[in-house]
Amino acid sequence: MADIDEIKAKLNKLQLKAMAGSLDTILSQAQQQNLSILTTLNRLADLEIERRWQASLKLRWEQSKLAEKVSIDQFDFDHHKSRKEQKNRILHLLDLEFVRERMDAILIGNPGTGKSFLANCIAGAACNANVKVLFTTAMDMINHLIAAEADHSLLKKLQHYQAPDLLVCDELGYLSLGQQGSHLFFQVISARHQKKSTMLTTNLPFADWGRVFDSTTVATAIADRLVFRSEILILGGSSYKRKTTN
Image (cartoon, rainbow, N blue to C red; front, side, top):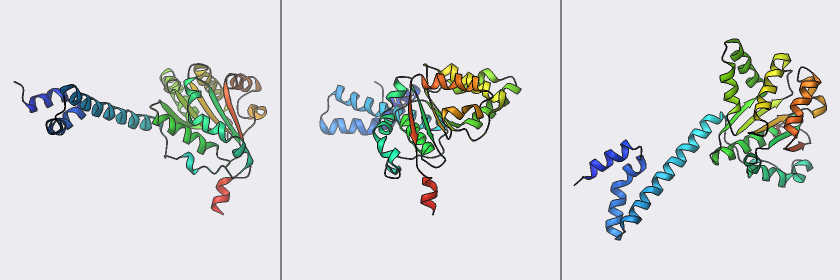
């Protein structure tokens, strides 16, 4: 008859680490509480499921490249009427239905109006729902893609940006992407179109995107794909960052 250490060894070999680690405790509880075999096994299985869930969430956060964890509770909806008027739409984004529907989201507004903060909140909510997320700035993504093209690893790097269920591309519009960068940005958006969700934050209205991309033709092609099935929020008001630091 197998002893407890032999069973633990087999559980560990099967990567059932929570079951192995809690076996003594659960068996003791089963004896004290006169639990059936099925109830005992069910408790062990629940512990293993919880361990794997927490491990998955930890991996999602690591993969996301999010610099910090923020909460919508920290977002001041009273700062400007555009926040109040769009509160339900903002909260709806946190439900992640747009990710499940493979839709996109675009947050437009002047610097300091809360675009990046909201994008960070939504990306964090997705991580907590075990959704594969990648958070990047527009320039950082383009710089990595240009470097990958130079060392002949572009296909692999494109896949890096195409794979996440939610790609958050922050700070589009502050710097021109140039011809090469514009074409690479188009490749990412085109590959993700209607397959995965993309969220952009930008300080520019669509009419000014020609200033960021190499031409109005490329800008229109990118905007058309993003707007096709998307949630668009326009945040107004003065800089909240400036308000809180004065």
